[in-house]
Image 1 (tube, rainbow over the protein chains, first blue to last red):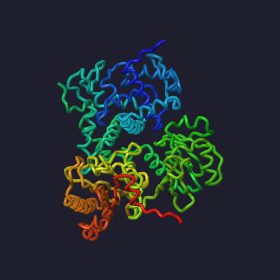
Image 2: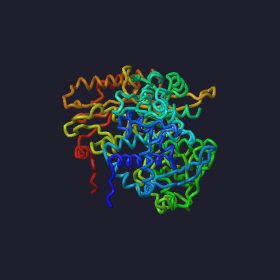
Image 3: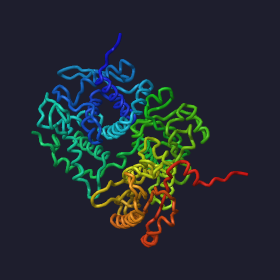
Image 4: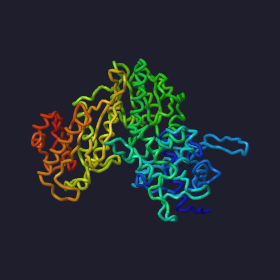
Length: 219
Length: 360
């Protein structure tokens, strides 16, 4: 049987492995499903800070989720588990008065994923992506593990009061003309308040922006 | 239409309040996982040293896939190691760059030789290893960047906050040149940024100083693991290429920033990045400007010392005395160190310039 795989699925799978690899490298696994989506979202919305192409330029502000969530990424995560590239570390149910839901944590199956990551790291454009994701993972993991999805939900673009629930947060796709990336604008604004004589480089802007989200999420 | 400068759900007042509370980025921003690892271990060693810990050795192994690396190795998890409350000497640790969690490995060893052997025999000889020697008055470190299986590839790591000496700093920059800049091949190794556009024609890449900046800063951060430093990109007001400082305690017991070194970098080239010829007077002007900047910035930030580091990319290696002749008197009077390293245009040119003694 021949399986048809779209270009978009391949790109999503590749980015999923890169995201997991960056988290693994910085000691951020096992990672919970929603935290992985939060990390993926921040990697998309902040990519332009490093002049990188995001994998997705938009995300649905889904009222049923506590933060950013990508159905396509979730499908690839489940598929990668099936193929043994990602391991489920823990699976447990959460009971609330309204519902019972399953929560899982994941880590990279490094031995199986290593050859694919080696190919990705060998691509000239992806070296920069790897450095960007490692930097982002370092900052993201400084946020308390029970507040990481909250931090992504408090991101400038995602929490924009102009965008109601169940509408798309668009930060640069061609679907919405002149889309604005409020997160990028905020990260750039940090320079205006930096001490005299200090010019923030792109890594510093990235880290400072995530620290701002951390401050908001920690309350 | 949406405001193109909108900051969405974050108010400008929140940005201002955040920057007032946390105005400076962490030194680790932009550092490689390896440098973060060294600096995090150094902070831990400092903390443990401060409570009187001693012993023989500690080894910290850097893993990029922690669970995979410890799967078949007897070990004990120590998730709060970075808090500094656990004894770290006379143990072998495996951890990640952030020191988020760590495992103490149950390998048997009794001295240096059996320590290294145990790690190699345990299949972990390819992991970067930071060895801490606790036997002296102060702990000293040695990083094996390619692991103990390639033990020749090693660098010292300084855990102390004492001011960095002139010879010490010069030696680190010399080693950086030797490993990363001396020949065109070295400058592109390890995904590093190229400083040459076409080395054989003497054409530098655009803004070579900026390319050298980041990489030199990384080398300095890894060596002087308890010092802070940052490189400033150009601004309209000028820049300090690299400022190195340490945090010390004032007479009143308050933490104070002691600015130790202002380092100005200059790439001296006889071609522009587009291949046009650069006149000798332009190089002389660059040297004078570099010296003036070093003097001015040292005064501005009240730093202890200043150095002008020149990376000479010109056709001929003129030697220090000739290359620095236009500024040497002024530099001596203003107590600015003048250091120069020559970048060969090919490996064969570097080989020809090296004097080898053939044993009889």
